[in-house]
Image (tube, rainbow, N blue to C red; front, side):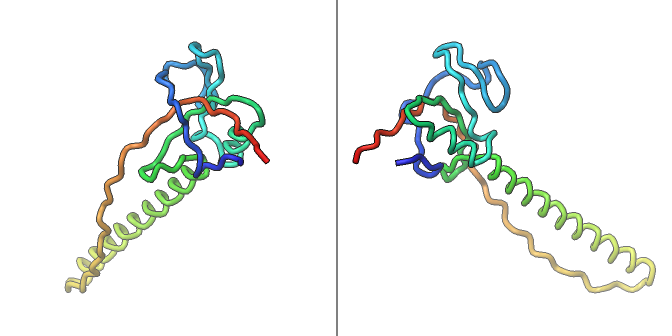
Length: 142
């Protein structure tokens, strides 16, 4: 059985803090266990799966999870940033439309009907969790 990002779980999380390790945002070196630790959240989904499914090799990983316990990868973060840009564009468009309506009202002198824009309710999300731990190779029984 190969790992996927949905069926993946670290059985014995490590207590070493990611910030205390030396390296970059993608790979750091743990001085305690003398292994490199791969940050799955700074990689694409494809690269993360390639690291998790290395045959007969122990892998040490860290990752961020969202409120649904899904592992966040660069493609996930890319979608979030893309949606944030769309939201920002929509807000700017609404602001500019209101300012142009206001300018038209003062220019002509008579009030115009105002558009009513419904706002979406803000949904509270849980903070992200970081997990660090070793992944053991899968046994392939036939």
